[in-house]
View 1 (cartoon, one colour):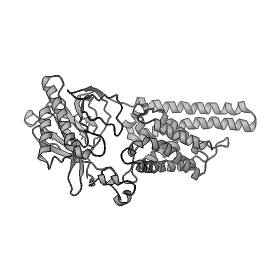
View 2 (cartoon, rainbow, N blue to C red):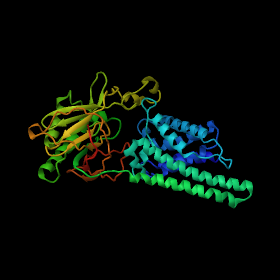
View 3 (tube, rainbow, N blue to C red):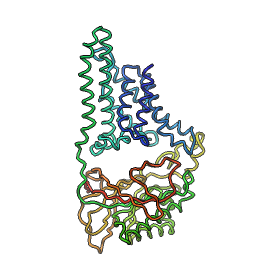
View 4 (cartoon, one colour):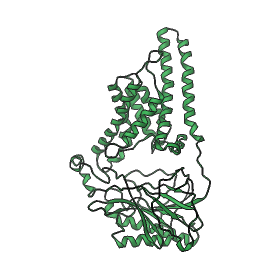
Length: 474
């Protein structure tokens, strides 16, 4: 029965690795505990242990999802996510069932690492396009393993975390094996003498895997670009944000205008690109001239390109979650439509069935349509500066620079923008944020933790950031 406390401890350790606890080292420890719990057990018990671990992790991790819709959807979502950990436990029990030389079950670190990557790949894509909350990689922002993202994205980071955990578990399993062997033979010192070197080797390998990513090149030199991120926020938190959409748009425009005044006064450097977040304009600026006027006014005042998230009333009767590029003096020049709308947030699958869980599904009165193509916005900030390349994706808009030819002459300073191919490289950009506060605005410090759902402040804020440009584009 000691395996079930191990499974519970595994899930809690994984939970502690994520915000707002941010104890990233707990992720490999959680992996190690589950690997130890599922070795040398029947498949059904491995699945049950995985389910217990998943519930211990996802119930607290996803508690925010029940703030406005109630406990039932929250528990159902946590249970669904936990089923994938149950499948992981089943696989680990099957592949870790062979005896070792000492006659007890052993841990296979590579099996553990590959099983975690496969589990996350499955969970990221099923059902309804997947629910990728709680991926191991997402807990490693401050870990040396985060550098693996430059080589293979989130799957590479997850593999590194799980491999470290598997190696830790293998070392502990070997010590347990030595003690049992010594107890059976009656020669305790000889059994432990065999196990300690192997366990020490496993620990050393875990440390090497943990620290080796520090050698991955992460260039931060080269030309820089200055970006201004504006967070307008909503007057009141909750699910009624659609009723406040004009106030949200006005908040973003007002803060941008204040920033423009600071630029004109010389107290703030001119940005190369301004970014407003997803849902900055829930009023379709393509069909509402007043919304378009507000956006164009802010763009012309700051005299810099603007990428903003907007809801478009197309294709009717559906909606689109779009990122729009506005240029000074030209207005809207390019758009990108989100390719993977979020189920139960941007569209409701099997609406009549899920209405029995919560009537809140009807707050999504119109489903969002999926975009058709990947897009990259190309922008010149000044005739002499490098081109700024911004990868467009609604909700999360990483900005990356490219070492590209200089912009045209001032006569064509704002060239026609369009789609380009996938970047040939996507080196991560580091960002040294220097937050500044407009008059009557509140400061959002980069070091402050994100507010929990339901506690988003209603004030407005702006952040200036100078980031080295890296990578290339074709």
